[in-house]
Length: 192
Image (cartoon, rainbow, N blue to C red):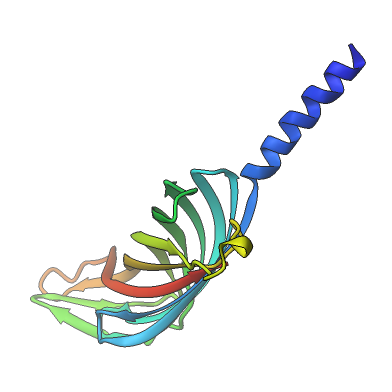
């Protein structure tokens, strides 16, 4: 009985070890906000083959607030769904949520009878995207294994949300409103 229990535990432990992988994703891309380059680095842990959780950093140029464009550094958590992960050609989709790190500009802008001002630093980051990946095959298949490098191209939408103080010049009322902006990013990356 003890031998059967030990054999069963060893079998399930090895199956679990195969599903648990640590991956790093690094990509460079172009933000469609002003067609300037940026980059992203993500650590991803796969508790099962089709699902990964991770942490990442990135920097892309887009709206920090309504009147200002700038390079925005970001720290985020990620949920990644892998489709056909064991195949040479695969897809994945991801959802990111985190914080954009920037300082407010204290600029104000008008929209009809409203005057807006951003009085707080940082914003809430969200990103969602899809990617197509392929395995970098070596010429000699004797050395080919599942740890080889994979390349990928991705399309993602990144956004920033923030609170702005609003002042109505007609009624002289003050309020706070949530605002935001988004842009698309096209990137090329390496998974290792």
